[in-house]
Picture 1 (cartoon, rainbow over the protein chains, first blue to last red):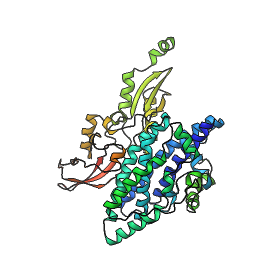
Picture 2 (picture 1 turned 45 degrees about the horizontal axis):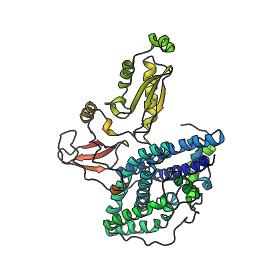
Picture 3 (picture 1 turned 90 degrees about the horizontal axis):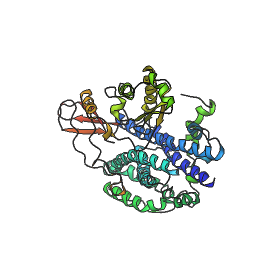
Picture 4 (picture 1 turned 60 degrees about the vertical axis):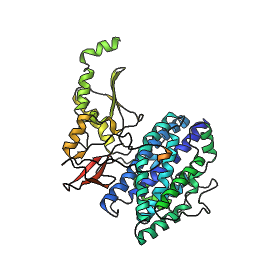
Length: 260
Length: 177
């Protein structure tokens, strides 16, 4: 059924952004600037990993409706190659310094909370209940990344410079978050998906307010990576995803079906 | 109905199954039970089996799978073999479901119990990602309200780290969720 194929694709977009960002945040384990931050960052990753599992589980059920058999959460996570991933380019960007990690997180959290607010009113009951659960966690993530953008931006000369560099460098990956392609539009029309195009105005308003409070200069809108339907959500990625997937997937590739 | 009548002599009562569930400690905070925590949403005899409906706390909480295994083991121990465990996501778990008596035990254990969620967290574009001013969390050791947050996350996803400026002890705060 056409609707199910479209839904499967959309669910993978949701799941993959959560999973890939969770993996990036997990790379901070043992490397956080202080112990409390090490724990906090990886706990955010843990929430996102849990959310990705909820989306993957549903994706597997939808795939089973189409093909008779659906992939498991592990198969989705570990047995697909880069071109099959549907995450935003933003979330696969390397961790960099802590300001880089927080800029990526802040841009994503604000968008993610808006998206989940929208999806919690989805006509698909399963999508709505997953979103309604996840948004509570994501609200907390957004509070924390907002705190850090302000703290580092309105901090020392050094932290301000690094935070400014971080928000500047990641700005070009934000355009992709507000586009809708044929898959999105089909599901928006069905009342299942949230219209990303409508998230742009509240996102910009929120980001502008925080950057201002952080004494940071808002990056100017220029050319955006992954725009025009050639972004991560369509399977086009930056060079950073390959090495990260190699790290994430090697065990399951070497020992397929390995159980914890 | 005839099936139920036949099974009745050996079938434990609803109350006794609830009692078995109420005796299962939370895997990470053993002073409260799974029932206290509010994750057991429903218990019912359906068809010819007991069905326990659980709801996860945080999406990624590693205790979720342990909880399901503990429930199965406790029921088996109470002579209820083969109970079915179902997961329900909606309505999403909230700390408002933690029983009042369990909040007292949390404080005695050294974990500041969660405040009520209403007013702390409002989901919606207007309040997007803004930190609401939260009332001071009383220290579970000395009761002082001169406390502050050290970190937004603690030893488990459900807790934050605080410190008391009166008795200088650090403590966990069960976050309102």
